[in-house]
Image 1: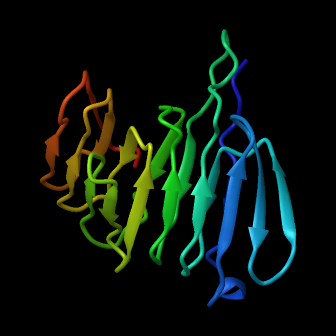
Image 2: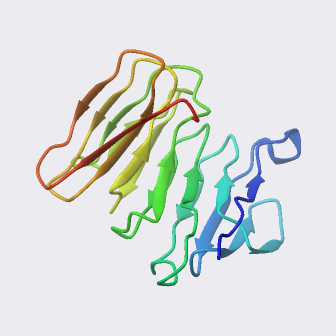
Length: 171
């Protein structure tokens, strides 16, 4: 069984000067509370892209079902000073592929400059995808996954743990 890769974007002009709080319940369902009012229930979704405000994005507290292939949950705060919780699971990927400049991510310190002018707080994040620019990705003492496109000149430091580096043109 292979699931699709469905994404929800909250970065339209309708969400200017607003924020969202995302809570994934498992590998493909979440609720989104919008500061402009209302709550969205998302099913069969593997990615949420935030507003220009200071969003809170909480990934899945559980892994995907065993014996099946499932996509990562992409948590992309986009602009703003976002707070992102990965629950220490590699199913949750903090995604900076839409950045318009280089990102600096330090998983040990729990911080990231998002390439769009914001500084994000990263909680229990062990997997990150960088941008097409000259990124600096630093791991923690955990077993991290650092992903980056082939474009750009990147600096990768896994920190401690047993780490995995992934290079791809599919950013």
